[in-house]
Each structure stands twice: as structure tokens, then as C-alpha cells.
Image 1: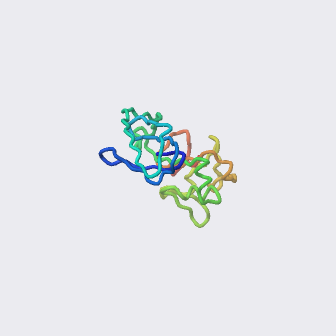
Image 2 (image 1 turned 90 degrees about the vertical axis):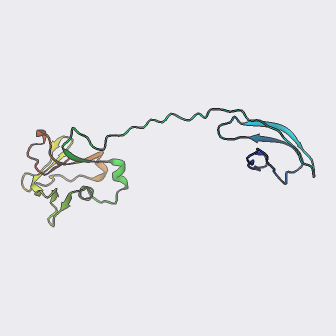
Image 3 (image 1 turned 180 degrees about the vertical axis):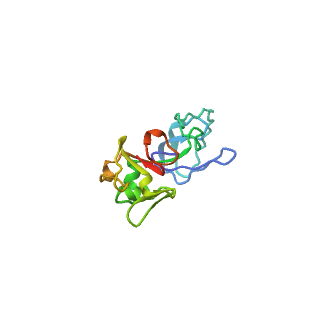
Length: 177
């Protein structure tokens, strides 16, 4: 590669190469290949209508990459008997939704009836417990959410269906936390 002219080429299996149409003068040439140390030859004289032979031997060099840490949760958690979905604020920002009910309806096993009630896994809408920061916000009259929650105030939304701990009280169908 000739960096000053943005010219380069690739060698054949024997390591031979040709770069055509190099203007006369002095140039610097870089040689590189994956797994080998780069070599730079400076002030190579190029003459008109002449081939300038260069012989270079690259030294083997280990490739060093950045450390990558891979972390993930198990797909199946043996200590859980419920199904849980978590939606972060970042995920919520890119979702095509207008209110919290639209987000909840996107989760598996959840439907909304004609009156706006949320049904989880076929249960009644009054069997869902709504919680905000660990405090129950379930309307005792109709079982719905007793306050309006704006999407931009949600840091994380958790939807739990199936079985749950006793801390959730009268939840029989699901928990929206």
C-alpha cells in the first residue's frame, strides 16, 4: 500500500505483486497481512518506465483483540414457575405505543376486552394486580389500574403471569408491576 497516493494491491500465493501507474519520485510503501507485523519501507525511488523490485519478509505476530465479556441469563430458570416479561425505558421509547395498555397487550397471553379490562392467560380482568414501585394500584371497584401512568415515567415494566409469591396478595391471573 502506498498511503500518500491511496494506491494498493494484493499479492499472489508466492507473494509477488505489481502496482502500476506510480508517478516518479520518492514514496513510502507499507506491507501488511493478517497475522503478520506491518513493515514500512521509506524513500523508495520510483523512475519512469522502470520496474522497482522490492523484497520484504513479514514477521509473524500474534493478533491481539479487545477483551469481550459475554453475559446472559439462562433461557429456562429452574427456580421459577412463572412467566415474566420485562420492558425497559429504552425499549419502551422505540415501541409503537401510546399508553401503558398498548405495551401490556403486546406481551404473550394477554388480551384486552371491549371495556378496556386486561386479561392474562384467560383469567378475569379483576384477577390482575397492578403495582407501582411495590405499592398496589389496583382499583378495588373494577380491578383495573386506579391511576394513569404515562409512558415517559416508566423505568421498567414487569408483567408476570402464572404462579406468584404470596407478597402479591389476591393476584390470580397476573401482575403488572
